[in-house]
Image 1 (cartoon, rainbow, N blue to C red):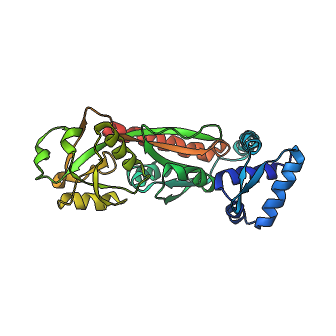
Image 2 (image 1 turned 90 degrees about the horizontal axis):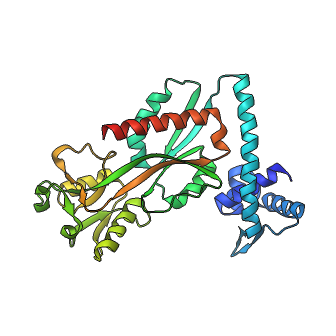
Image 3 (image 1 turned 90 degrees about the vertical axis):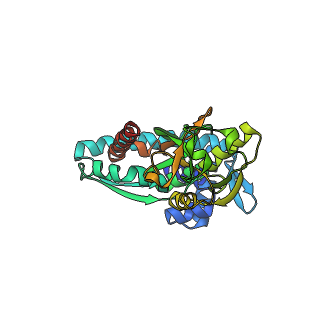
Length: 302
């Protein structure tokens, strides 16, 4: 089987459409389609089928993608071995981080990587949900993602998932709120409060909906704001209460009353996700070590 065609099949699995694959790899859509048809002829199986105006993988296509990742990982491992023999491993490493994760991790990560000048981190903040990770991992070497700790982890058949830290979510209130005098807050005490949440599908909103299931009461969400700094301003000025992650938003001083939830675990898990083939690059491994070290330091301080 042609390795390049296997690569195109994997890209279709991650990017979701022939058009997206063509744009990412500087091919024409017709060229991508022709290569996928040629691969199907090579293996003697139907690998894709029509889905609306596009294509989706068949069961045989999904099975071959998993094997293609193993082949591409083996090739990447060989490339990495040669790279280590030739020179000091280095080069650019593309990193995507969700915004509050970038605020929490990126300054320390860059400080640690400054000691390894051969590795050049190229970073971007991306407002991502867990559903976005596969497509982002196709464009970036490392994706720093987050999810509700009760949500299922990403599949590990084609991706390496590196746990970084567990970040508790606290209730934040205006300092003058009647509940601010309590050291911990029970779920029953928060019924009826106006909540400032994030867009549906983002991990913090997942936690809020989990709490709704436990209490039997639907939270009254009055605003949906994805920027935690804006949320903090709204809470501080009395426009509602919110759940905010402890480490990445814990520098508000006495402007907010921050209280843990009693009787329930509420947190988001922060993870680095990358293709198994990408993980073979020595420069990428250097970045992962620095990410883990910075996450450990944040947890220790917290």
